[in-house]
Each structure stands twice: as structure tokens, then as C-alpha cells.
Length: 77
Length: 225
Image (tube, rainbow over all chains, first blue to last red; front, side, top):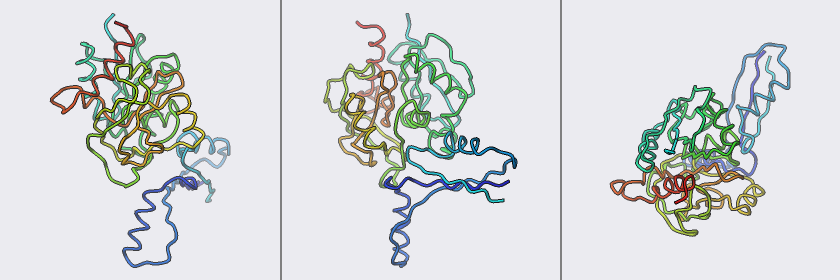
């Protein structure tokens, strides 16, 4: 089974990379952009019988830093 | 008893030698050099130093991989048993990632790598790392980092300030750290994490010796004069 884990900064946590990209997009002439937030995606290939608790554990212990980041797990196939 | 310090090297550490030289210069004894894969620490350590650098290439997040390396279990038990631990720059990032210190260090607000002398104010001159300074003293210590933007929620920040756990603040906050925080202490005061590099200011040839006082404070805390 494939897991896709989306990691994003929590709302309210400054995202300097997003801000720089926002600025660069405007520099290229794109208008109407209200906000840019940059995150990270981790894809894992795992055994089909993996428990949800183990997935949560992996996210909390390593993949995301829950002080500043949220994560969302998607079971792809 | 001679002072027994250890410097941990992770793959990608690059200030470990500077840290060892600074410790030897102040304590008169070369520190032990430990490797990230070492599962056990020697007993009887008076200080464990986590140096600056780019451990594991900053993969995932700065300090994230090092915080899960075998040696950190030993560092965490030593810290919980009261052994002084000093984390500088990447070492500070490792301490927050491992949960030994609160908060997180994010990309600098202006996205620049900042490498220059930084004026700081000593906020807590009573910790075992800072007794050689006067409270409120202004000192200069170099910084060199890309991810030094300290973040914690308001409640954590209030607690850090209320408990006197802010060790140093930037006088010129260029990385965006909340409440200008440059260095913080653990609740028991035996763990200090800081972005500025005291080991780069221990010899007049470095351009300043304000960092030397920090190492002297650690030494004096162990064996009061």
C-alpha cells in the first residue's frame, strides 16, 4: 500500500519560503495570488496490514514536527 | 578531578573541532569525542556538547535525524540525570527536535544565511552556563545559520520567560526569532541551547572572547573557586 503524507506549517506559523515564492510569482507578473504556503510530501510504500496507530506514530515521532507542522495521511492504493 | 567533557560528532557536524579546541583551551583537558552511532555514553561526564554543522545534511528538518540517532538516547538520559548539555546552532536544533528543549528553529525570516558577529543580551546570569556574565550584560558572539528563527507558542514563551529560562536575547533580531530569543535553558537549567557560537569567541585572535566566559562558567559551576 502507498501512503502519501502531506506536511504543512500550522496556520499562523510564519512561512518565509512561501512568502519568497509569493513575491517571485508576482515578479513574474502573476496577479491575484493571496497566499503561498510551502509544505512537504512524503510517500511511503508499506505493508497492507500496517496499523493506523503505527502510521500516526511515524508522523509524530519523525516525519512532522508537531510544534510547527500539521500532517495529513492519505492511503493512495 | 579534571573536567570531563565530551563532544558529539554527527555526520555533517562541522563545529565539533572548534568546540573541542575551545573546551581544551578553557578546561586544560581535551574532551572525549563521541560518534553519533555510539549507543552508550561513558559515565562521569561533566558536560556533553552538541556542536554546530549540518547533521545528516539537514535532511527532513535541521537536527531531525540527529535527534533520532543512537547517541541521543544516552544524551537524553544523561540530561535527565542532571548532566550539563550544551547545544550550539545545529546542536540547539537537535535539542528542540529531541524534545529536550521546547520550540523549534525555522528558516530565517529573511531567508538569508546569516553569518556575522551578533550583539546579545545576557538575560539569565545565574545559570551554570552564564554565571561569569552580569545580568543584562551586552556581549558579542558570532552566528552562522540558516534556520535560527526560534518559534514556540505564546504559552511556552510565557513560561520560558516567567521561569527565567531565556538565557540570551538578540539585540538585533535578524532571523525573526519570537521575542528575540537566542538561547534557552531546560526547566532544571542543565541544558542550554543557543544559536550563537560561543566556541568561535574564545581567543583574542577570533576577534572577541565573550564566548570564553560561558565555558569558564561551566567549569566554575563544577568546582566553585
